Image (cartoon, rainbow, N blue to C red; front, side, top):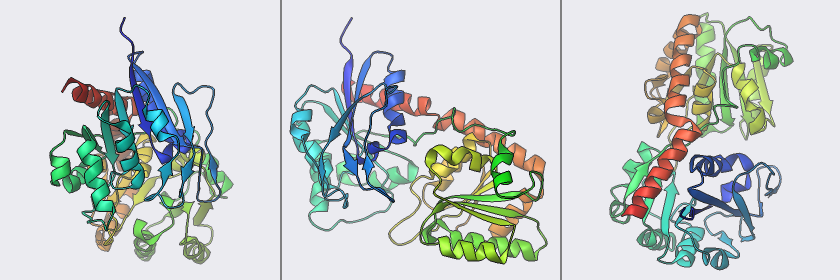
Length: 383
């Protein structure tokens, strides 16, 4: 029996256990054909406190914790011990750092010509980087064997660039854990009860994500107020945190008993909040420097069979496909009509929610995503 192929996957986001689900699933789906090692910073700045990377006993992957410098600025962050790590034998080196950041060039330089070097990107804005980052991107891609776009808008942005066009690539979405995010009609009342809401009351419009303007919170607040003027009954649940929290609490005060704002919710605790929602709204708004790159909350809502209404910003239409409702990001009246229709029709909500769950099983289950990564790795090694 031949020795297993060795995969090294590197990324600063791997400091969080949940972000290592892809690597863990690749190890499981590899069925002994692949030996998977994850490299992550030993410590990394978090939103609230520094994150100390730990390895759980049930993890399949080997975890290498590396010191990092300048971690507060990911563009110039570098890893310690990279030359020693990449001096080992690897068949594939998968780098989950954008090719234009300094750490990506560091990986390319240390990896040398031996392993198949693969970059993964969420970049869906056509940016021209100031020196030295443009040169870093070109250097990283010259060394790469291939690249992965986390969605169609990423492929459309990067694909025409000569450095990317000259390399094989695959479009593979982000994934969701269907065992943790799953329909739970019995549990939908838990969060509602904690909020002081009746389990059977007006339908709940939910939002999950950062409390920032670019995620469309001003639009959503306007739409909810327009629905109220039209006599449509609703309740609203905002889950996340960020600069717009004060505005949301003012909105909640104006609609006492109908609006709840939940902050400090860990990712592990998200499913019960999704179960409490009748509709998830994802009204992201494109800015000159950003448009929605994926929308993890969408696939998590799909997995929980919660119907989704999303804007047409960036990757959202490609994620939703035919399994939800897509509305123009600036079309306030279209948002009012879409939510009014769903809020007033429980059968339609169930139908749309079922389509979302089916799409999650077909496209976004981590097992599906991992197998597509392995197929691409095999393609690169064969070539």
